[in-house]
Length: 112
Length: 118
Image 1: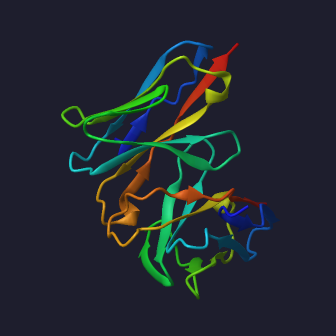
Image 2: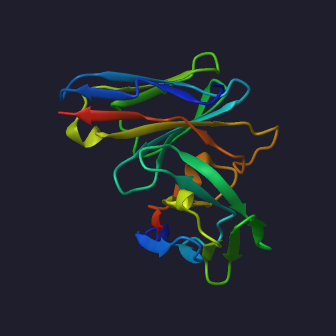
């Protein structure tokens, strides 16, 4: 089993739709969680950190479920510019750089 | 542009040759990371520098790979005797720990160097 698993997609949704995807992690002691966005042939960029209480940034909402060991990302009122790959990042141990694990990403395509 | 820069952006080489990549982090950042990314996968950690000290290395980093950050600013990643399996995107990221010991800071990635080994 991979340490961080994501549905590779692609998720193909119409503009304006709400879309959500999950990321599961295997190490229950994992300490910090993030969503990065990566456009085609570009570098990853931080979208948002994921806090235990859940957090929202505009149209984006991230949730953490420690009991079931997953994090989620919800995108409301999707825009064409949201088309990208969304990478889930889990840090198994905050004091160690090598414990930062990236998922393989979920591809999202927004159609007009 | 004051972001992370990497050179070259593309490198094509023949198997067995040595290659060297350079990363210039954001100037005030004390942390520097190297990752490797292949198609359809997320970035995989290779190594980490805190200032000029190389503090962590992945088991993925064979003895053909070496990285330096001599003055705590730019970093180089060298691959000796390249193999076709080394073909990948090599990403550099930098961050600042603001005096904290944890790796919860935002990493800023460079555009990467795409290596093709023929």
